[in-house]
Image (tube, rainbow, N blue to C red; front, side):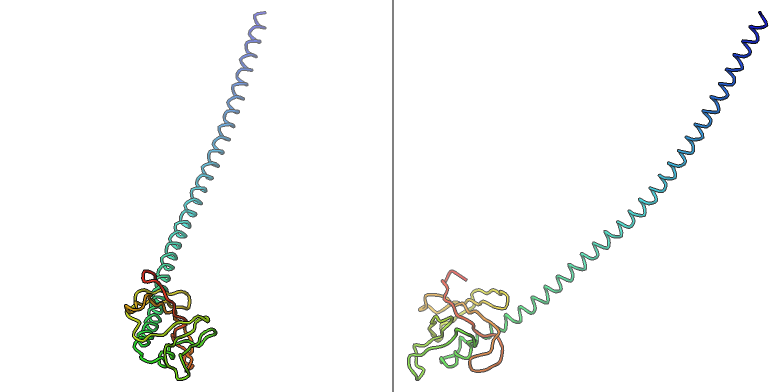
Length: 207
């Protein structure tokens, strides 16, 4: 009986030892799997980090390229605007010179040479001799010509292919003149240059 107890005890110890060994092997395998998983995650992290650094570098380069392009575009726009302003000023100056010449003429025949050849434009006189009162017709509306009526330039603007020049007028004229200038041949010559498309009466406070 005592011998049986020893045998049972030995078997129990053996079973415990086997279980301990198996548990140890299981833990060892789990630890190995964990190490492998850790190594795999570390590799992925390193890969992600490397990829992030590459993409970050590409993004920085793209941002810099965008900034350089925006700067170049801005410089180009400024250059174009400068060229446009130069062209507009030259055209504006040519139109002003035309009115400077117009306001010095003393005969209606001379004044007629500044009017553009266009549909709806014409002239009229008191008689066949060309005596005044006389004037121009713009869009079939009469505008009386008065010598020495135009004084100094008051305001101007440029719209598309037209230049609008507003001038002060002499005391006895109750309104100012606005000359609408366009590139066109004249009524008596075919040279295309800045000519008077229309003359409008504007209130002295208006432009």
